[in-house]
Amino acid sequence: MEILKVENLSKVYGTGEARVEALKQVSFSMERGEFGAVVGVSGSGKSTLLNCIGGLDEADKGKVFLSGRDLFAMGENERTIFRRQNIGFIFQSFHLIPELDVEQNIIFPLLLDYKKPEQQRVDEILEVLGLENRRRHLPAQLSGGQQQRVAIGRALITHPALVLADEPTGNLDSQSSQDVMDLLCKASRHYQQTVLMITHNMKLTASADRVFRVTDGELKELGGETE
Image (tube, rainbow, N blue to C red; front, side, top):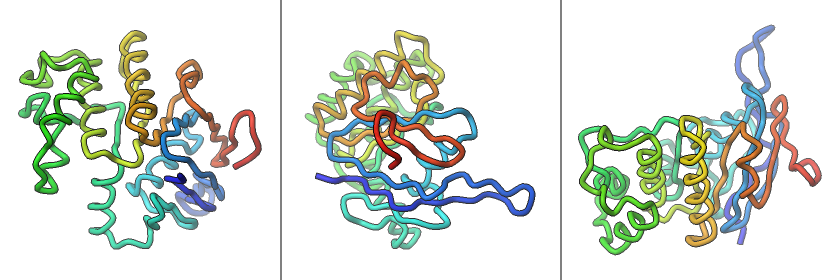
């Protein structure tokens, strides 16, 4: 089942001599449960791609369909709600709320939509993340790897169709990085969520079903044809 479809996505920053084509007619699609990785040097356009797919930034041309819905055809408020309910974001900076404990940080997206968390779902995610004994800890009481696990739990709690991870291991040591990769694989395999991850570390792409490279705003699938 096709979850994500990107059609001729283009994005330009600046004008004149400062004009930069961050994305050049990028097109590709992903199925439910696929784990994709996007690699590229700094400034190649990979973060712009992720931001446009997630509706955090608006493309100049092209379309993004998520579960058949055209993201850019929505009004800003509708897109914000749709994004919160259908896309899970994981960033290099964890963006946890310091005053909330682990469990409260994880369920926070549900509370924004006035939804009551399913305790069984919360307990399952805490177990998968290895945080059962940390549920009442504040972010300041956790290691960097544990904080990133909380961020992953927050991204998964709403059952999002798509999980977007922007350099999720960038601030972590090698063991914590592997733990995060294992969790993203579990999101893809166990929860059948589509995962698209940006990384500069080619070693981390070994777990991905598909690997894309962005070069000067153009996307190619490694081992395949230009998407």
